[in-house]
Each structure stands twice: as structure tokens, then as C-alpha cells.
Image (spheres, rainbow, N blue to C red):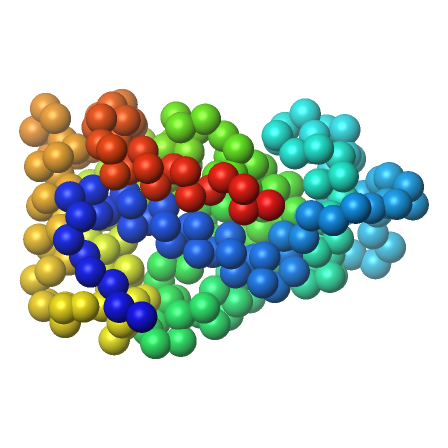
Length: 233
């Protein structure tokens, strides 16, 4: 497997595709397993857990999943995470298995924070399924908002060059020897400059959510990448 980093919309497409690979990993691990369920699974119940998720009705109103889909998602989540919570180290361990050729630790950290909406250091089933709903069935704007949140490391509403450089370096670290051609030391910085030339429309040195969404919506490559999430489950 080799990866060429030549697409004009590389940064956003790369992030979106990598999140997609994360979703496929969840499927392989049994966390995404939409199958028929019987009536005995009508509620989300746990007997010995650290966290008990919200009820089906509330989660159904917060997501675009059906009741049966939520039941199946929860069954897979419970099997892999009996405590009802996924901490960052566990998340990194799971994610790193998908990229043995590189170091996925830093990228997994950024991705974990994107799912950990309440910033409490763990991903609950609610966090997971709400994020999954956006990525799989959200509108284009909702998906782009999610991607922006991934880039905005300190969650201040802006993407800085420093943040983008950290993201790009983490992607190159994660892909490791599978990048082609071989990565030059200055490659991440060059991609950051291209990102800002494209996204920073008023040239103030930061990218806002409005600039990000407007630019992405005009990029055919990025819009095509949004299609990757359809029919995953």
C-alpha cells in the first residue's frame, strides 16, 4: 500500500479519509455491527459498568440512527468496552493497531479529543454514537463542522498554522513508511502553507469555521470525500 499526497484538497480529504478508516476499524472490531435484534434488547442496560448510557429515546432524538441500529451499536460497544467508557490510552492502542507501519499515537490523541465532546478524558457510548451519526448521516455542513473541530486543537474557534502543522506531522508519523514518495522534512510545513493559501480567505493568519466550510463546499475533491461515509453501516 502506498499513499500519494498530491491532491489540492489534501488536508481535509486526508483527515476525512482517515476518520473513515477509523470507522472501518470499529466495524472490524465489532463496534459497528448492524444486525437484527430481538425484543429483549429494547432498552440500553448494563449491570456492572462505570457509566450507564442515556435511554434509547433520547439517543434516537439526538442522532439519525433507528432504535435497532442503536441497539446493535450498543451491543458492539459493550462487548469491546464493558465499563461503558473508553479512555485515551485504550483508544490509542486500538487505533494504533490499524497503522502498524507508523506511529499513530498523536493523531489518535487528536481524534480522541474530537469524540470526547465534554472533555472529561473518556469517550462514552453517547459521545461515540453522536459523532458517528454526524459522520455517517449528517449534512455536509455538519460533517465539515466535525472536521473543523478535529483541526481546532485548542477549541478556540480558529485553526492556526501551528495547529495544522501538528495535525499534518501526526498524519505523516501515522502513515510511516507507506507514504510515497518518501516524505521530506519540510513536507508537512509545505502542506500547511497550501492549506492556508486555500482556506485563509482574508489573510489574517487563522482559518475560521466560515472560511473552512465555504472553501470546502467549493472543492469537488472534498465534497466527493463526504460520500465515503455513506453505507458504512
